Length: 406
Image 1 (cartoon, rainbow, N blue to C red):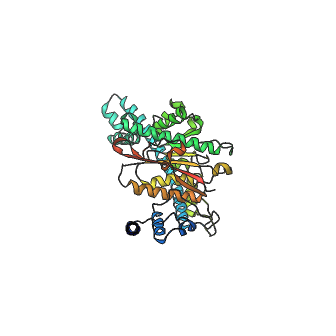
Image 2 (cartoon, rainbow, N blue to C red):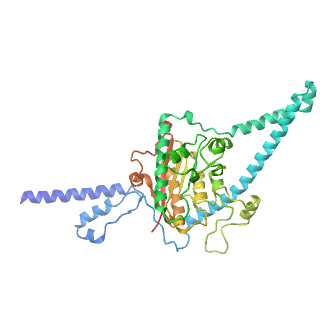
Image 3 (cartoon, rainbow, N blue to C red):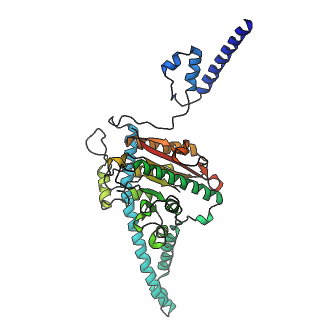
């Protein structure tokens, strides 16, 4: 009798200590209770055990975001996201024309000065040559050529370490598997082809992986690159793998930017575009980005640097577009991968910021966001994949999936 009493009392003491300990620990957590067992399941337990179950239910945020009713009013977060993308879209259209104008003016000036230099060098008299083309003009030509050279591609796969190449190959494999997953989910439901948009270097590493290892057709692959020399290397006409029209000399955001304002019901008359936006659109001639009207099932923003607003800008330009696509394509899953350079420095905070932005975008599309690498095997991805790797663990790469809420 005494032993049974001591056993029950010991069990009661240990249970109470566990409750106190868990209560103390959760007081330091900022997360809310995200999973509460059913009332019927809890009611059958003693009060002290019920408290333990409730506390154990507390944890980190669920990794699958949920959306509100699609018919509900637009949230403040969505309003801010759309307004930010609308302002960025209008700015990109203006900047694109200004940059092209500067490039054309620079090349015209270089051509004129080079022709003048050749004529000056053919003159037998040095003083006459220097009089025909002054030192100031010669210095100007050198400066313009330097600007042109400095903007050439700095990417060099030959300088990558073995660890970095293995890391990139692993994430190219993830891109392949997620693209196939999206293709299978859309198969037979849409007349639209499954297209992939990605950033690639002059070696065409990702394009090669998709075509040779993934078995995708080259016409399904689209690339944007800010360096003309890299674009030439990626195109078939320059010895690359991709059709010339599938490679554009532009930033990712520019390539995906639509010319029309992003319209949304904000509960007021009119759209989110203001007079300034209309003016900027007219400056660009109302032209869309090269790939603005193409529906993509998968995106890979590799080599994005570590500037989070830049990444969010690319995601917004890609996923807040209004495409005239069929319902099956628009509701099909969309894979998104991105990289951050800079290793472990503030990487958790940066990932959280990007994830929250993408969650808002997903909600706007009536979709939910899934963290793919929480369950890589589900999508045919190796469980050995790492988010951080490369040379000196200097690159962070992750994958997310947007899926229809229903």
